[in-house]
Length: 173
Image 1 (cartoon, helix red, strand yellow):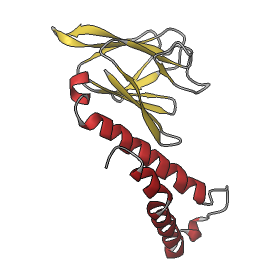
Image 2 (tube, rainbow, N blue to C red):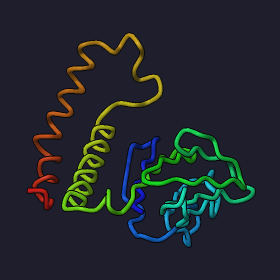
Image 3 (spheres, one colour):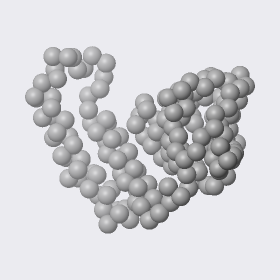
Image 4 (tube, rainbow, N blue to C red):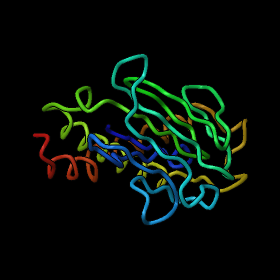
């Protein structure tokens, strides 16, 4: 099972787990997939291999006394178990976890995908760093062509300088 985590607040994403076995998700260091949020329990849920309709699949158990999570668009409360085969998505607080079977995730593009994700995270962080995002700094009236031109200039500058150096130093070439 390959687990890709996306923090929806920062838009940062990473591969958190990539093994054929079951795993735990939570805030504790002992969790296989660690989510740094005070709103996530020490161990929030566990995913184990299970037979689903006579074929190999997975069973996700939301542990007792934790906040509900959303699995494939369905709210799942503490103590409940959900079975699935293939891919699944889990929303837990500000995190979106995407589960993929090892066969689907494996292949020559997996490493390239990981590098591309890292590059996109760098670009995103640099754009945010250069924008003036202070509260009240931008009003609805300020979303003009001038602001669009400013954003385009920031992105062009990044692509031609910082991001270009970062991209050239990766294994994607």
